[in-house]
Image 1 (cartoon, each protein chain N blue to C red):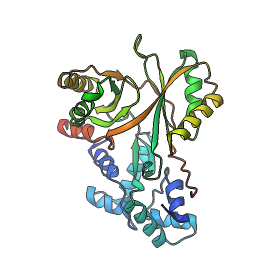
Image 2: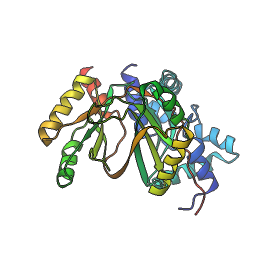
Image 3: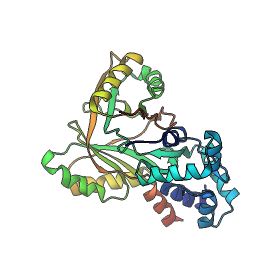
Image 4: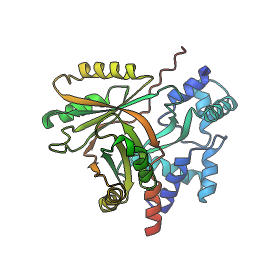
Length: 165
Length: 153
């Protein structure tokens, strides 16, 4: 990745313009050719820096008002299987393994479920417990009650990179 | 919220692998059998209604810099004040109150672990409460976007 890739990612964080030739417009901003810009996005996708490129919907405005983080205590021997299984469920967003905090926090697998309301989310969690055979594992459901801050990632890192470079 | 059939398709079907070609909206239009102008107008309407955050990229965690999930247990009476202190750090991304004794959860993004440690130490010092760090060990999720239930009613 070079400086232009960082600038490109930062531009993409603001979103693709809605006009007939949006890539040409971004390319102008970066003084790149349109072809070069498209190839850079393709490369960033191919190397996995860009995990997904497309329409990013606003769940909340679309009526998905309930959001729960579910944390599971899964024996280490099963975490791979359970992580793979959870990530296949269409209403699961994000599925991460994280370290336990002995004596404080026994949970090692995290996933996120969005739903139109609390009841729906709880039903979905019941369903995924059955489907992924999680009956024996302890878990907690952490609904979010207030959002204090939400914005796209990246800005501070980009600024750091620029300051260093 | 009454969405047209075209708006629903635009919301659901182009969350990943958005066309990477000179005229992406025309490519979408061809796939859906409508005009490019109709796609542009519908996409603009979705933006105007704030139903779309943006057409853009989701960056893979830890591919650029390092991210960290962090949590704190904060008395309810101090929560807003502590959240405001935390929000002032540019490294802080999401910051949510959640129903748990660990009731404040936020994501930090920094250059590397020592950068994150410095931010965490700063937060602890300014708020007076300890911060737990939960680094990512493994990401199981393949992000294909979000399957929306757009049935009316």
